[in-house]
Amino acid sequence: MESPSHALDRQDFASCYTLHFRPEGALVGDASFFCRDGECHLFYLSKRNDDPPRLPRCELDHAVSTDLLHWELLPPALLPGQPGEPDDDGIGGATIVYSEGQYQMFYAGTNPQVIYHARSDDLIKWEKDAPLQPIIVPDPRWYVPHDAPVEDPYLLTAWRDPFLFYDDPSEQYVMVTTARLNHGPLRERGCVAWTVSKDLKNWEVKPPLYSPFIGAALEVIEILKMEGRYYLIFCHGETNTTRYRVAERLEGPYLCPEDDILLPNYMYAPRTAMMGGNHYLVPWAADRIGGNDDYQPEWGGEGYAWGGVLGTPQHIRPLPDGGIGLFYPSIVDSLAGEALLDSSLLEQVRSQRGEWKGASGRLSAVSFQGMARGMLSAGGTDFILSCEITMKRGAAAGLILRGSQTGEAGYFLRLEPRTGIISLWRYPRPWVVSRPMAMKITTDVDYNQPLALKVLLHRHILDVYLNDRLVISRAVHDYKEGRFGFFVEDAESEFTALRANELKE
Image (cartoon, rainbow, N blue to C red):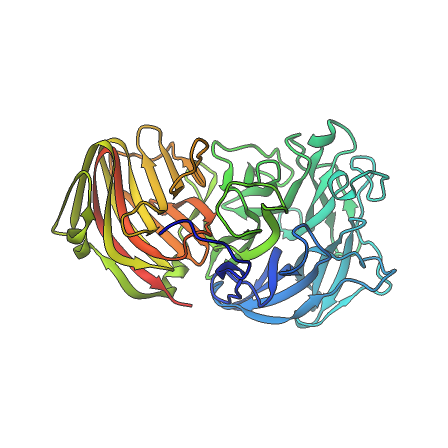
């Protein structure tokens, strides 16, 4: 299996209504959820496949699910205004609460960035305020005004991505928004603004809730309250990651935990959704223009587009140290179909190098002369896989996913006990300049114990969990199917508890 050619009608452009939602002919962008009575309503910014790569003139579309896995498309919630109307440049992110017998939506305009309001009796038909006018705007005492004469309004002014919740201790509604300070280094003014109200009609803009001077904008902000703590979740554009801070009080101070990254590159703009008493963090995964795995990080051009598919709903839970983490979402197990692998197949591994011995549901592998691969004849396209790896000694070992017959091509999931790094590589690797597609330093993992790996691979979205904790989440484009395999590199390892099931649509 060689590196494939890339056509624009590739698989990840196809519509999908299970797990990684994408409606026919469209891309999914910034989303928000309203969950009630066993249903979860998804409101997301939408554009067409053939729109330019960068942020277009979006509408706010709508879908519903009873399990966060299967989605039904509903009529659009909000369309951009007619020429000359305040929101004629497009709809921005939205947030919804239920109050006074109606659903209240607050959404961002895009030019200028201000907050507007709409209401609904049934979550389906929405009515904008008439006349439409801003409900909340930046207070120039602390923030860059929405009408400031700047060269790049989207970057240099900000009042978008609203998130609204009711805070019981203070008995008021709190809205947090992406904003920019009116002072400081130009590219470090990104901050979290907050505005409060008792009745959703009269609003008081407060001084910044969090202003760390770490970027131009802290985007898609949310405050999640769990076990008495406040968790401030935000997207950091400069590193394209989702991070969080923690506080004992709503007012802060919000402090950086030891490991503050929740989601890695290009799993962006997540919001939380509640289902079955559990919280899930759901991002969207950006498309690649050209549809390949080459490392080209620019937005547009031959890099990433704005918009893609809905990401995997990651189970978010509090940690013993007071932080939060993302874990394997067991709700996905309901999609498990026909068995593809079990431990009995470990006796059928074929290899050309190293020492491989399979017996009694265990596979031992040794190679201290570089890399040795062991491949199975079984393969898969979309699947849930679990396996335990015991790193007895040496440099690295791991799994091969969607591999070629010999294992020379495919996706390599690599564990390095000496460095504590787990990484994802596409093989064959480029000459001279080669880097992992994704990596995570796991400082709290005991590599002397068996390591439980879970892999969720659906279409072009790959999620990896180590001891149930999310460590890698990545879009993969080049290899659509292939064989399962294993490798060791200057190491001795043992593989057990192997199981894989196909994923049902």
